[in-house]
Length: 138
View 1 (cartoon, rainbow, N blue to C red):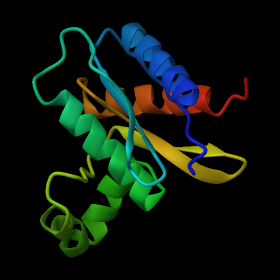
View 2 (tube, one colour):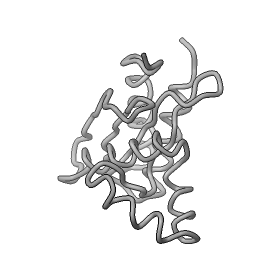
View 3 (cartoon, rainbow, N blue to C red):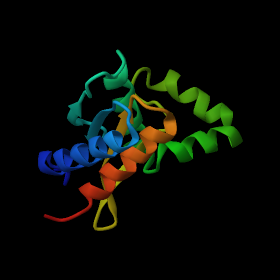
View 4 (tube, rainbow, N blue to C red):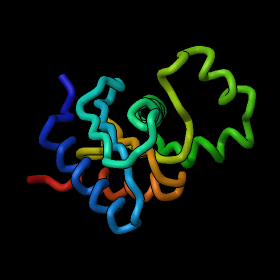
């Protein structure tokens, strides 16, 4: 059983949405467990059509590879053949685009949070804020 709970996911979503308000951008936030299974998706008011799917794809990527998607974008520059092959191997499931980070508890990844709706950097900042809030024990 995963350590990712709905309460943790809700805390992460609230923090990511709060950061999005500070940045002045609408955002959709998705939280998955360590296996990439959906825990919670909250579509922000005014977000674009595909943001639930893109935020989830980003979150699944961060959970699967246990690293931020921002880091994956950089790795893709060094190893494009591998990263370009991923969408063909798992169509529609993984999106290695800036905007998601793993969520850890006690030093191990329990899930990930992905954001979509802003620029890649805005999405990343919102995901970082969400992951930080999720890591706080309550």
